[in-house]
Length: 281
Image (cartoon, rainbow, N blue to C red; front, side, top):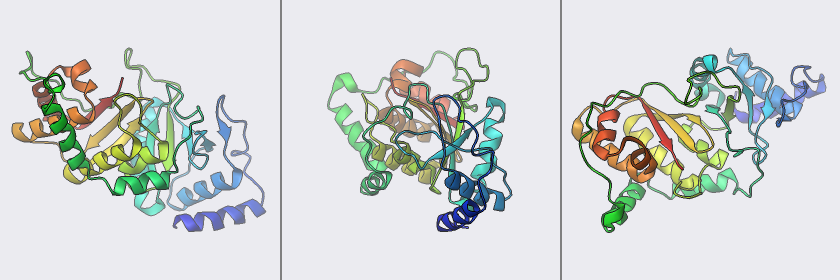
């Protein structure tokens, strides 16, 4: 069933009355989804064999984006199930924590369609190369080099679903359903980026598209200033890892300058890791 069919299902369900589940009082700070939209989306997933919990509108800027709250312990297994249905449903799941009010605060965002059109005109690899060229012309902006003092640890676990300090479950984790088959398009729907050194949404789309094509990287989690990807085809050689480390540094300098310290340390980590973490101060 495609998205056009969702509307037909929703209208049919609306004529029969609304589910009491979807009419429940929304959580604090959240807005209940329009019953017909929620019912139509749940019906779509039900036809694919997945029963969704009650859905909520969780973005003040994108009222058509719906999702549900879930436990940290269930987050990745739920994401895996819904990701496996993306081709059938036309919806891509993303695990989300809005620690800084990115979704709750009303912002003048460009329509997602406009941002996606802008992203089509961008070559993610070329954008990274242009950033590298600019850095090479400024000695102070050059990427720091140097072998790590100790071997890097593999990063194969996602950080965002748990408290970064204690490792305990969090109570503000949501799964958002994005009306696209492509995870790299999610930043355009969320309106992620465009502050400080964090690239604007269309650049995120272009860069993540490049990494998806090259490494099979898929977006899994997002926070107010964090993106985490899973690499389907991690780098295998020291040379490839260093090339990727250069790209990641020019996409998100903070993971080096306020993180592992040098490009060589990042490359060492990437060669062993399936999870890529990005954070913008």
